[in-house]
Length: 423
Image (cartoon, rainbow, N blue to C red; front, side, top):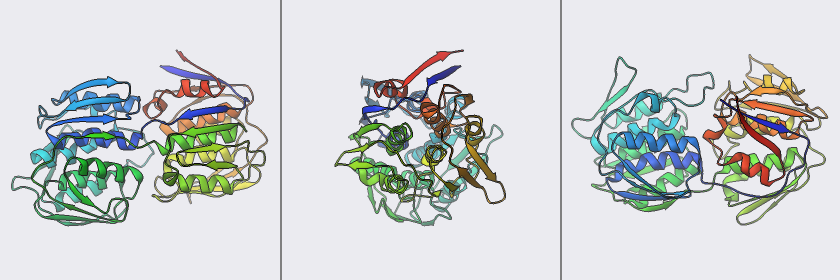
């Protein structure tokens, strides 16, 4: 077990470079299965979720070579349609991408139930399953909780409408439909930048996908795809987290290697909260935020404010002037972290009936020992510790390292007083 110890109340200043997007990297890695070839993937974040993904791929026959800290060569010609070890699959929500990728390539797949962060609602994959069935796959559930897909007569293009705009289901259906006979149309598709990133990767391999980034995606089935060299887009959630780190500590932080277009919902909300920003072609600089204002926060599918930024924004609001409400249109129960913020002096009330937070800004937070309940909530507690008076200890930080590349080193480079210890 590891913990972060933070001596807070110090202004962060300097520049930090953003790594590749976690939410693109994981599906792209699993998408290499479709190529039956060699792919070079660049700008991979050095995070535990990527390492687990590579372990899963190796367990089913992929050959992996590290070129440098951010670039790998992955050869999937040896991949077999077998079930990967449950102890690996259960560590990772993104392991469900194996279903679409293996179904697309082999016409069959068997994968244990995915893991990942627990937001209290089970995070069902019913949209994925319904889409696979509409393409012609037969779905069954084994006694060991594995999901089995078979398409004895091949997959056929179909019209698929999602009840909700699911990122995971959109990507999984793109994988499964890549080789399906005819054309598949996904309506109410997710529009997140990582959807576009994955579609660009598949098209670079020879797939025929149009409309990614809109609510309607068309996949014309092809006979074969090939390997390619592909560079993962920058991580907008990591970028947003460091921008808020600058804002909550009243510092000047330049965040480099970003795509400002991906972050418009984040930067618009920060400006509304009186956070001064300078936005360039590939950087965003946050300037000292001396007069933070509470603003209503509601997480929604892209192009709305990302649910993965909701805990960080809520933490910023705890030290802003006034009162605001926070809701999440994607994961309505994603508020476990608030009890830890209250232990640090935040004034937060939770309306369970409406799944709504009310945050009343306080002048300062104080240090405490807190436990990260999930990846982004853990990042939010680190932000609180950076701003708080005194010492904050954050435990369960393994969850944070699932999604943040070298977070200790990057915060140290900005002047934070933070260290990691084992206990």
